[in-house]
Image (tube, rainbow, N blue to C red; front, top):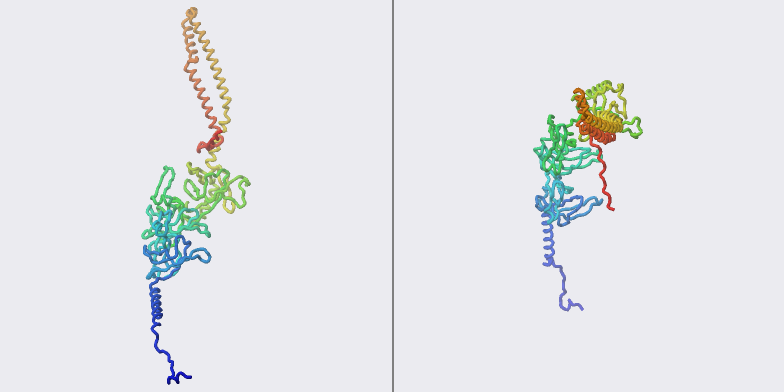
Length: 550
């Protein structure tokens, strides 16, 4: 049975040509999502990468990046590097911060710090640490930066110059220490490091403008300890600097008095760092000749850097004390001598620092050695016991025909120094004192005193006998001359009695002599043990140790 035939017609199917209103909902939602993505993308700042030593105080999603106390970004992720040597941070910056992100832009973490420059970052105790951005001025942009360990001392736009200081011994400077010129702070120490390759300390200094004009080619830099005590023939002087230099030290520079200023230096030039102002005044010479001295006496007090003088004028310096050959054992050498290496500089002698002046000095020195020029040790400072090398003439010394060599260096002949001669003379005096018959003298004095006592007693008995004799009647009848003679004899004998002043003075003299001889015994013993005790204080004994209670 056909349905169509029953109704007289057949149903036809056809497609709908218009969209249903229900499709408008997802389309509108998609358009809104795309718009939001576009708005979100256009309202976001650049994404940057930061490399930091450690993430102390850094929290993803919370730690802010600030510039002049204004929020300009947020740290989004914190993760370790593959080699575990540092931490990698990704941060989303705010809109319109592209002009801040240049190649010379600087980042550092602001948190509480305690150092020689003081206490900083106390405000982050409650708010937490944040990263500070110092915008750069370079032409090119960048999207990755290394976070500094310390806040920069000089901003990128600040005017001035940077110089390098090299030193092999001076230490104690750290970043942020002041650079001082005549008591006024004109810069800071930016970096302090040690070069393993060159085995020296290296410091980078920044001198602010306009004080950078003070740094010329002839300036000398030295460590500022804040206080300097010096002793000279004129007395003891004490010099102090500013309060900051007393507390923190730093570096001082100036042109030595009498020197020309020189040319103005450029950034990156290198200078030496001296230990103090006195050593900085020493002019550096390019031409010199090294010699070796051999001393058969103690060189105690002779240090590296001690002056070599001729007639009180410094002509060189001591380089090495002692100067040993390879595989040399001091006590195995014969004769028992200690070698010292010195350096003579012709520029100190005639003011001419040249090769011709050096050759002239070598020739003159060789000729003067034949005339008796010798090197000896002399006390340079009685307070410290420091020694200096003195070149002087000793005509009594054997004539030297040639200088000889030691370990490849020419050898200068030496003579015994003044202190050695003084010790020898002191020993000779002590020997004479020790050879004195002190005990025999005291024995004879005792015998003499005993005999004098017996004589005085006999004289007293004779005086009494004469008194009795003078009182007899027969004696009164003697002539007047005889009576006068007896009276004078009686007066003379009375002067030798125990109560007489002469006898008492003789006894006092003998007692004083005994005390003097007894007091000389410990002095002679001390000088025998330590001949230089007349100049230096004798070595103090050890402090007594209290015993434990029983």
